[in-house]
Length: 116
Image: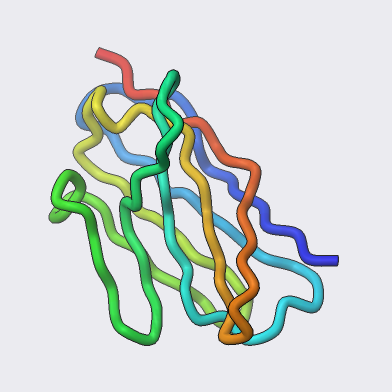
C-alpha cells in the first residue's frame, strides 16, 4: 500500500516563506515525476506549480524566481521552498508522484494561506 503525505503548510504573512514536504511510503517503485500542484477554493482545476523529472525542473510563470523544488530520491521525497509569498499563493497544495511504471499517486493536500 502506497501512501503520499504532504506537510509544511500553514498561515504566513505577505512576503513570508514556507517549506512544503512530501514523502511517499510503501512499495512505490522507482519515481520519475514529482510535482506540486495547487487548487484554489471554488476551482476544479489544479495548477501545476513546479515539477521535477527525468526531463528536468519546471516552474509556472507565477512562481518562477520565488519557489524552488528539490527532491531526495533516497527518501522518496520532494520539497517546495516558497519565498516572497503573496495572497495569490493561497491554495491547497498537492503533491503528485508518478513512477516509471506509470502509476500515479496524490497526497491529501496541505493548506497554504497568505495573509495581508
